[in-house]
Length: 436
Image (cartoon, rainbow, N blue to C red; front, top):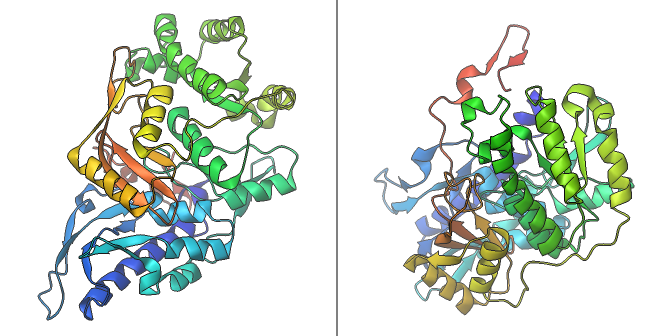
C-alpha cells in the first residue's frame, strides 16, 4: 500500500520529466533566437507535490545574456496534459502523435506552436516508454488489479488509462474500473470523454456511498458524522438520489449502490437507507470489504452479475457537434443541476480563439470542486438556484479535450494547515508509518 501511494513504478515521475523536458526545450529555443516566433508561452511546468507558491512564478531571472525572463507557473503532475495523454493513448505510436499535438504557445499572428515544431515529442515518448505500460498488482487476497494513470477528476478527466481498461477486458470476464471523486465529475468524464474516445460502453455503474458522507451532505458537522443521526441522513440522501438520477436517467445506465460500511454506522442508519432505496427499486448492497475482505463483497458481486445482463440505453450528455458553450451548459444543467453558466471575459475570448482554430468539436472537461454539485465547495445542499462560473478555458489539443475552469478550482493545489507529511515517518527497519 505504501509503495503504491508513494513512488510506485515511477510512472508519475516519468510524466513530470517529460512535461519539464518540453518546458526546457521551449525556453532553450527562445534563448537561441526564437525561430518559431514565440509571442506567448502557454505550457506550464509541473511537479508531483501540492505547492501553491508555484502557481505563478517568474523565470529566467539570472541576468545572463540572451536569457529572456518570463512569467511561468506549475501544475500538479496529475493535472498535466501529459498525464491525460498517457491515459488516453491507444499505443506508443498514438502517444507520440498526441505529444506532438500539444500546443505550447502562440506566435505574433496568434497561430499555435506545437511540441512537434520543437521536435520534442520523440524524446518525450522515450521518457514515457515504460510509463505507458499498465502495472499489474494484487490485492491481499491475490486478486489481480491493474493500476495505471492518475488524473484527478476535479482538475482533470479522472480515469485510468484506455490501455489498462482494454487489457483488463481481454484478460477477464468482468472488469470494474474507477472514475475518481464524485459521479458528477469522474463518472461524467469517464463516460463523455474516455468512453467517447475509446469506444467503450459500460454494462452497469456502481455508485459508492457511505453513511458518513450522506450525513455530511445533510448538514451534520464533520466532527459529528460518526454519531448516529437519522435526520442528517434523511436530508443528505438527496445528494445520492441526484447521482443515481444522473447515471440512470441522463446517461441511461443501470445502477447499483454500494454502501461501504464503516464501524461507526448503526443498524438503524443502514436499515433506513436500504429501505429507502428498495422503495425506489434501486439495487443496493452493503459492502464490508474493509473488514471482511472478499467475503464482505460477495453480495454486490452476485448482484452485478445479474445487473450487467439487463438492457440499458447508454447515451452521452452532449454531441460532438454541439458548440463549446452548449456542451458546458448541458453538463452544468443536466449533471450539476445548475440554472445557467456565466463566463469571464477571458473565458469568452478563449472560446472564440478555440473556435477560430477549429478545435470546438472536442469534448469538455470541467475542472470543479468535488465537494458540491455547484462550483462552491461550501454549498453542499444545493437547495437554491445557482450558476456555474467559468473563469478560464484551456485547450488541450494533445489530449483532445477542452478544460473549463469553474469557480476557484486550482490546477496546483495547496497543502492544508496541518500537512499529512507531518505524520509520515520511517523507522529503523524501513517500515513506513503515517500515510493512513
